[in-house]
Image (cartoon, rainbow, N blue to C red; front, side):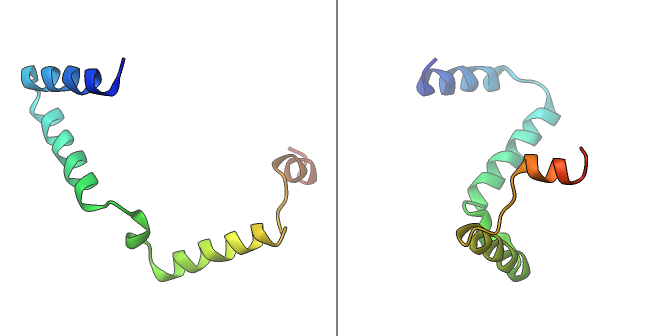
Length: 75
């Protein structure tokens, strides 16, 4: 099913929907996606710094595989 067909199916379904809680939930989802186009803007400076440190660790090869950590801790 193509994207346009899916949109039309959802519009048709929504037009028949009588469940207020579902409609209210969908409104919250819509408003959330309209207001928060980039989650980076909602992250604190400490969180951004931590992400940047992690990316630098990856670039500099300071990483461990999942399997090596499992082996180290006997998992």
